[in-house]
Length: 315
Image (cartoon, rainbow, N blue to C red; front, side):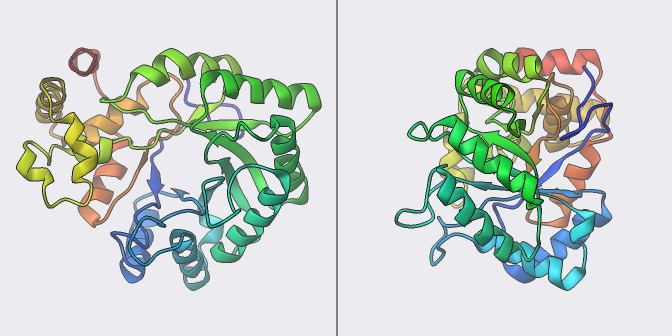
């Protein structure tokens, strides 16, 4: 299957999306500026964030990642060089959540102000809002597209049935349509995407930009025991992978990486890039070595035997 561009047809070169969830969390502002400069230099020009990032960090309230990106745009004058994606819908304070039209109108203005830009390339519903009619949500997004504040819209964390319903709602009502899905998908998390979401992605020819592409860092190979997780920021996230299956996947990544003169992280991302429906896996980086892995993954071509080895280990 050809890789699909976000928002247009035709073949696409392999692409990795830089995750902005770490900005204002594990990556402070000055370091974020340096990493963003280095990312662009390495050819990583697709950046994904959300209004809610990084509200979970001590002292944060949400908006920190967007604000850092906005300051970087103002400082570097590189807004035009970046494909910018952000999201709306998760709670940003009392009464500030969901996908009702009035809230979307308010939230996009807040994001544009923090991002110091007058348009967002990909504006995504962060989570389905079953309490709001899909037509109301999509009409609000459609208005933003017509106003030029948003170029394209996408969905994140939708079920297959709701995604299909949303896409049909757009078709029937002549509204802007989701061009992408942001699902939880990686070598350790395959079932839901491959059984429920991929059929919808393929039927409607939208792009998939999976998050947690490296399973919280587990697929880099740095967590090989309970002890490795004890002091790690994402230790609690990856402990569920410390199993016979998880260690089998890491062993397969080690073997394939050795055969290709590569690293487990690059191999895990290359596997995703070779999967049906995938446009651009999302992965964050906190240093230049990790950035190098993201950039190098786009040129790593896995042979059929390597892909089968990873498929079998992660089945």
